[in-house]
Image (cartoon, rainbow, N blue to C red; front, side, top):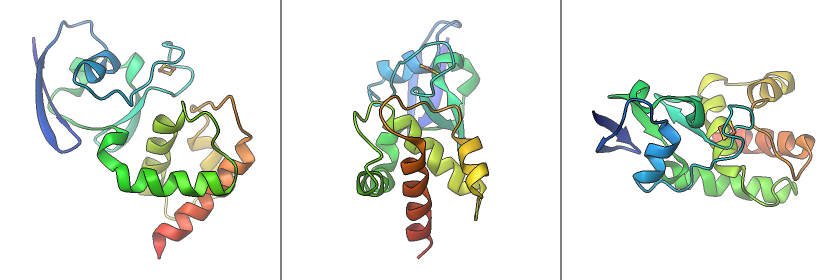
Length: 151
Ligand code: FES
């Protein structure tokens, strides 16, 4: 079947089989920031945004994104680079393997919540696992980033 997506503002078409997952299709299209971790919907590494909502691309059939807007980290470089600076300032980012999915989830959080509590931030991000750093330094970085983006 022919799948049509809008990826990072660009129309993309690709022939797929009905059982292909969005993760594999996006990587075939060249969006290599989309990472495979657990491949079972548990780690959040493969997170992308579909119509601005975080989804686990390893567990989402590509056909479910037919005609939708998909955002990978390649599509939000300015925000991603700025957020990375805030993460580095708090010592919250180490290997960076989880960063694309983690960053996209933070950007989605910012669209949904104007002033989230710590509990709301942690709850929103509880599907994005990081094996390197402490979640408290990430929480500080997210709050500092959100404050800076309001200015
Ligand atoms: Fe998709 Fe882990 S690779 S949740």
